[in-house]
Structure formats: C-alpha cells, structure tokens
Image 1 (cartoon, rainbow, N blue to C red):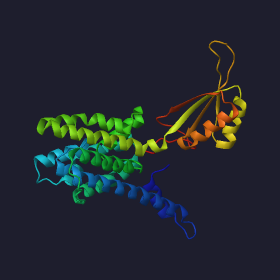
Image 2: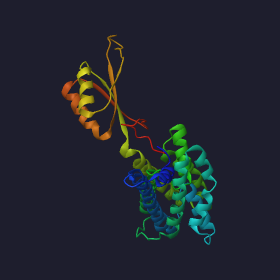
Image 3: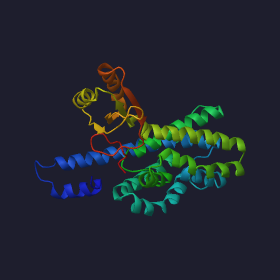
Image 4: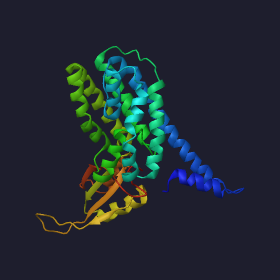
Length: 305
C-alpha cells in the first residue's frame, strides 16, 4: 500500500467530477488513523497526569525519561520534554520503517505531546497498587490503539516496531526490557517502593499493549492427522473457506504413509473447526498452536507498519 499522504496529494491533483472516490477513501483513511492516534494519546495523557504524576510513578521509554526530568526540574513542561527527546529517533523511523509510518508518527508525536501537556483529569484512586494497575491499563490500551494506526506516538514505539519488523520481537516484550533501565534509575533516585509500583504499572501496560495489537487478532496454526483427511480437507476449504496444506508424514512405529493437514485460521473459527473434525473423525489427532505473526492477504495479521 502506498503512502497515504502521497495518495491524498495525488488524488487531489487528479480529482475530476464523478471521480473523487479514491480521494474520499484516502481522506477517510487519514482521518481514521489520526482519530486512532488522538484517542490513544488521550488515554495515555489521562494515565500520565491522572495517576503517574500525582503518585510520582515513572513510566517506560521516553515518557519515563520525560517524567524523570520533569520530577527533577518541575519548571520544564512535560509535553515539551517529550517532544524534544523524540526528535533524534525520527531519522531512524524514516530509514528503517518507512515514510508512511514516519509521517504518521510525526503527527502522533505532536498529538501525544499535546495530550500529555493539557489533559489533566484527576482520577480518584488512592491505593498505590490499584493506581499502578489502572495506569497500566490506560497506558497499554492507549499505546495499543495508537499502534493500530499507521503510525506511533514516538519514543520506544519506533524502536519496538523496528525490532518487530527485523527480528519478530513482540512489541510489549521490547518495551518491558527497555524499561529495566528506568526502574533502576527510579530505585536509585527515589525509593525501591516507587520502583516496584512502577514495575507493576509497566508489566500491566505491556500485557495490555500486546493484547490490543496482536492478542485479539491472533491466528491459530492447526495440524490434523486422520485417516479421513480428504473429507476433513474438503470441509475446511468449503465450510470455513481456509486453505489447507497437505504434508507428507510417516508413522514412526507403523512406517505407514499418513498425510498431515496444516491450516491457519482465526481464533473465532477454532471452535467450528474442532467440531467439524470431531464429527468426521472422533479419533483424529489435532494440534493447535499460537502464531506470532502471519503474512498473507487473506489470513495475515502482521501489523501494517
């Protein structure tokens, strides 16, 4: 898919009466992605100013660095610190991820910085542990919504996306590992208790991030061994509309040839598939495993960065 902003420019130049459908579609995509970034940034801003700052918790990545500098020098505006810290990362985002991601991430950095600076809604949660849980939920969901768009809010989001594209490392895993440095700084400058509450917040945030970005769209890889493999294969293709790969297998003990069916389905299709296999062959051997990423137009769930 070409860069959305380039498409918008091209469509604007080529638009003719009765032929503006492409422009409207592209404009709608741009507005939808900006809406995702805005909603996600709003949730993150609520977590930062509603819980993290009042409780003196730190955060992860560049948000954590911005909070750290803000705590040490309160006169420096939090949103401005975050904006300035992100500038060096954007050259990396342009080089390793792509122009579309870069342009949307510039917008995301600006929107996120404004949200952190101006969204100040106090949340009436007084218990430290519950505050850490709630902040992690807000921040993780907000960050996940931002990453469901074609961009990010900057900071470690850019680093996480690059590592996911290059090495298939999950987003939340990268962020959690990167935040170890923030925890050590928190324990050294403040108290160990604050660092532990920050750890709770970071863990919850990373889990919610993984859930929003990949958890709800995770694909299942299924292996099926059955003497009724031909019937099962036909029903998977006709009733579930999924492709089937037939692998050549041989029994380790019997040495008999035994085809193995391999298919990839969505989580919502799993129950129907198991019921169908059971109705054809109650003795079929079925193995279901999670997938990290699936590339492909019809069944793929690889993020679109």
